[in-house]
Length: 338
Image (tube, rainbow, N blue to C red; front, side, top):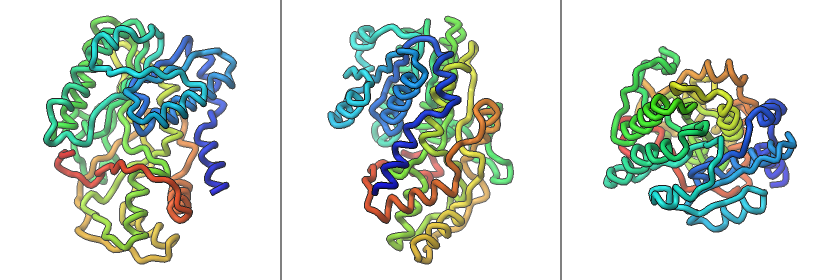
């Protein structure tokens, strides 16, 4: 596990480009919903980048913090943590005024059967946050689930593709975007809508799910036969650097890796590493939920961690018994039911 620990440290090490951009990002950074899958590593990366840049910026993370261990780890890393229910207007009002906000809060899994709460988190709350931080720059996390399924040969949806989400989760996320767009125009608030799919690291994500199926001999579902992936560390860097690209009206930005990746090929790669023949079920549909991130690559360059490296890291982590997060992506879902 020693080598993997070093790789985990690498994921939290800021690039020279991020350090330089931190010098241009004036003021403290507030991460709302920091307790999720990406928030802890993003906050720690921001802390290290600010320290390396010598800016003295405060990095503040807000969450309910039901996981006290996660909060303690952030505190130990020098991130200031605040426990708050963002749906409580009084608690939201008491949060510090800051010039930079990264909005990570949201609800995905459990939408089916609890749609009202999903809409409250994904559409009502963004309006409250947009009002509260109308004088700040806001990077608002969204998802590629707002796009329609397109033929795989189309190369993925670019930012000018009209939204057409399936299911209430995707619809509520489009609602979140529209609310931030409305308040960006109303108050001239600089906003960047960050459409992500799919961030992975060795604890969770599309690659891990495929790898575990191959390793255990479970069938890999090929119905959604192609995906996009990006290493979480690279996605975190883009999110922080995106603070310099917020505009009014809001800018939309797709964030993912450059490849349209075959699920069958991924399973075969893990089969080679595990010396197991993958088992498949169903066949590839001609359409998939894919994004074209050419604009993000123009702004920030290509991701530092390559697809082959991601595959190797995921396999090593599994073989060596690394900790896993029980947070499946449900990337195979084609009807938007989460």
